Image 1 (cartoon, rainbow, N blue to C red):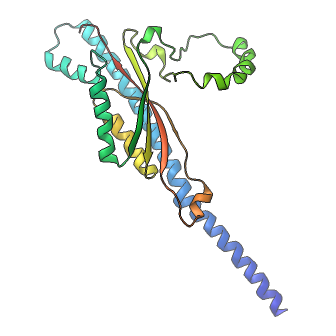
Image 2: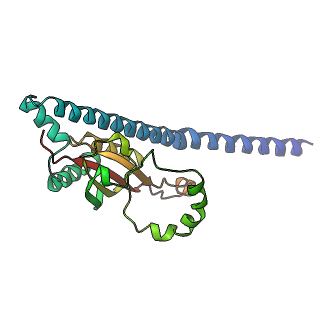
Image 3: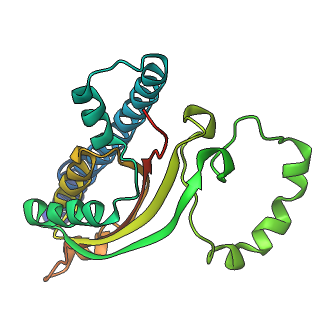
Length: 233
């Protein structure tokens, strides 16, 4: 009887230990990463708000031609009059030195497209039954569509039609998730408007967490859209 009680106690202790380990894994690993992902979403919403603010400034400039040159100069820093790709790439590359994130490549997928002529999301586009019927066919062509240039996720109706778009992807390698978050925030701090469209990354799995030599580095692809405005102000 004593042996049976000791065996039951060992089983209960083992179950309690497993439960404690699962709780610790969730509390110290999974939960912080969920919170950081929520922080990224908040940052994207902040950039959307800044884009709306820039749109309002452009409209005010059109209505008031007597704005002082300092205001125009500040606006041109956020929305330049040309592509200005050299400075754009330089500003992006500088972020890797302050974030510890290595930039593997920068791929420009499309530029010189007017908002009015772009494939941005259009809230007035027809939907309903036609889209439903075409879903199966689109799924069959998924492999072919993967080679097409990505499209920005910005709402077309929220932008002035005269703006021109530059969409590009930044492929990076970060030591961990915290460094990746810091890199995203530094991109958003660039004086020129940077809209984070999509962030694709893979977190280390549970197998990696319990391995003897866990690999914490994260490879991510960040799709960004920026703008320029060739019109006079």
